Length: 218
Image 1 (cartoon, rainbow, N blue to C red):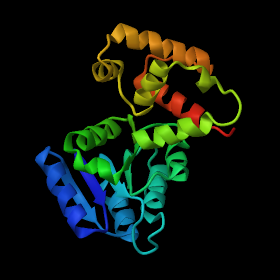
Image 2: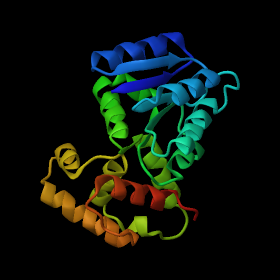
Image 3: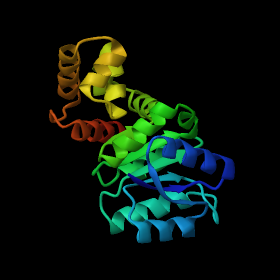
């Protein structure tokens, strides 16, 4: 699997290269600036891009904007964005086209090798990998003043929804919560009913449906 990596900090970039190569990824390019990333995505056609949000020369959202521009030229290009902090605006921009193959992780997650590699593979396969802190902030925003449908979820249903929104399958959720897959299926059916969403057996569609609900304007 060919990866284009964009990170301006040399030590982190080098560490990510070594980590991905250890898990049998091929690094098509490892760049440090927005213009380099733009060229690499256009010329190399990677299977997935792993991109720091803030890159030179602007050090604002250069990496994210390059990745989004590449997705407009090649719809569905898998992009996993890394950020120092949770920025809901960035998460919304990534999810805007509703097609999946996107991820948003805090850089802290990089230090958990298996979790990070799993996220890269999930995004490359067309899935979604959202940082738990992003989901928690979206949940908190939806559960503000006044009764929202999300407020009618039981504590267990909220746990299931958080894991589902991270892109996890029923089997993975069951293993995490130490329950049966049948129990998870029942919880997910209740979640979709309470949120007024269409039930889907497709993991990515249900993730995007939940994220779209959490991210919609109040």
